[in-house]
Image 1 (cartoon, one colour):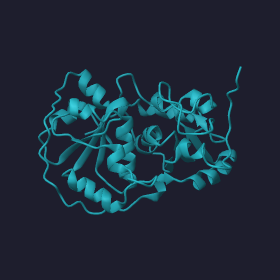
Image 2 (cartoon, helix red, strand yellow):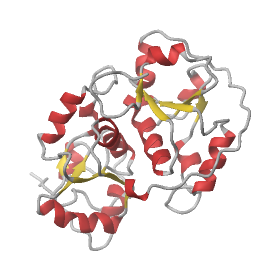
Image 3 (cartoon, helix red, strand yellow):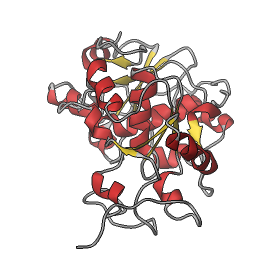
Image 4 (cartoon, one colour):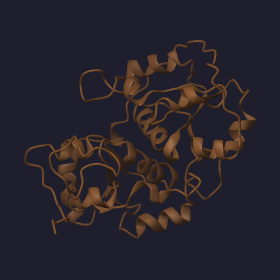
Length: 290
């Protein structure tokens, strides 16, 4: 089933594997894009759409939907707990990784990511359709949350001491300009949503996209191991990853926890929009006005 590149877990499938299983009723495809209109322009035949804002987030609170609502969502999408669920999306599976992390955190099993995402599927000239799949709703059992995969603000604050002692690691997966404090958002995005720029003390800056190849696929296990170990992010450490709202850091969480098999990796979903706005949180900033 997998792309074999020495990864620790069976969590990737190739575009060819997906093409060969389009008629398999036990394999369900979910597309998750930053650009939510992409699905309507064309998607892999049989894939259903997941809107990461509307479907995963609480409508009022800054939090996620509860476990019973996760079960209801999967039931609405016609997914059974015995299915193999393959996630894919745009931007090197950045948003598919976010959905993968959230569903894994929510206790959902049987998840995979299609290596290369939409980009590779389209580049290979494979078929897309605008037809809506026929969905038969199911009753999905309520899963149980895995709180060990999520870091909250106070967890991260306590984590800093371990970083300073060399026992923990913090990975800031944002762009170098965001890390330095020069900007508070990604390049080409509005500079809004946070009052202070910089990074959490002790964090190492390893931008998320360094883990991927030009075709959107993940680098080999050997290359990934060298990338993170070269920054002191090793398998023996308790690792927390963060970005701005935890979507880019979900991609890094997937690489470290799922592909490399690091045993303790958490995603700080409050990330910089929370940390940079919170009163009294320590910040390091390396950018200075010239």
